[in-house]
Image (cartoon, rainbow, N blue to C red):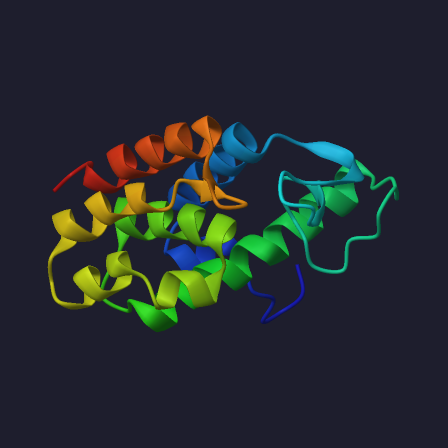
Length: 156
C-alpha cells in the first residue's frame, strides 16, 4: 500500500469496523459487476457504487473492490464531518445509511441533528425515516433501515 493512502479501516477506526461496513454493503447492495440502473434510475455497479460508473460496463472483482472502498471512504468521511462525535457501531450504521442516501441527505437529516445533540438512541431511531425511493415506501429499504437501526443501537 502506498504511504498515505486512505483506507476504510483508517477512516472508521479499525479493520473490524471496516469489515462490518463492507459486509453490510454486500448484504444490502448485493454485488453486480455489470453496471445497471437502480430502482430510481441511477447508474450503479458493484456494491452500490454510483460515481463514474458507465452503463453496461463490466467491472472486474478487483475494480469493484477498489471502487467500493473509495465510495465507502467518501461516505464515511462525510459522516465524520457532519457527526464527528459518533464512533463504533453508530459510525458504521451511519456510513451504511449515507452510502444509500448521500452525504448531503445524511448531513441534513434528523439522524445527524440528533447525533450532534448527543441523542445517540434518537439518531439511530431516525434511520427508519429513510424508507422511500421514487416517492414510495420500498420494502427493501424498510428492511435495510431496520438492520442499520439495530446495528446503530448495539452497545447503547
